[in-house]
Image (cartoon, rainbow, N blue to C red; front, side, top):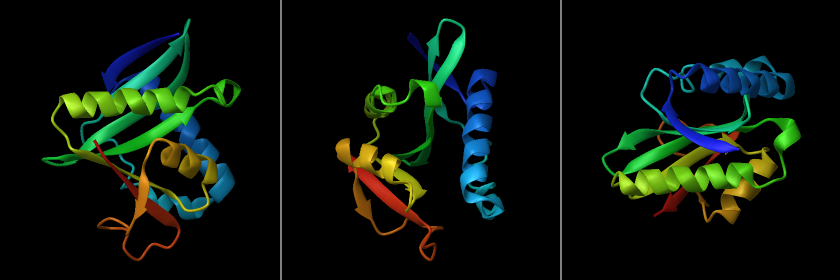
Length: 148
């Protein structure tokens, strides 16, 4: 397997994001559509893909929030590749990239009931904080932060 650094326009990334969104809509339903604008890929993203032969296996990305912070987004591993530490490794690679670019911390917003994701982020030393701007009154999500 190999990793590839790319951007939000890469069709391999977009394919994985479509799978991610399909799974979210199946589990959560149409109420998820209120986050469509927030999850848009119009702003530049740094993307890491994991590829096994010709199969796009996993992705993770970040976008710039401020001069010193990024937000990690669109973390996804195909079901048949889960429980192998792939998401953790992709996030560590993104952190390394963000640090090299001079960012001091990262944020993650996830569903408050997304316990597997929350557990992963906590293992990577993210901690829960008050919801970030735009999510202050949203009781369906939590915000997490990690200082580099």
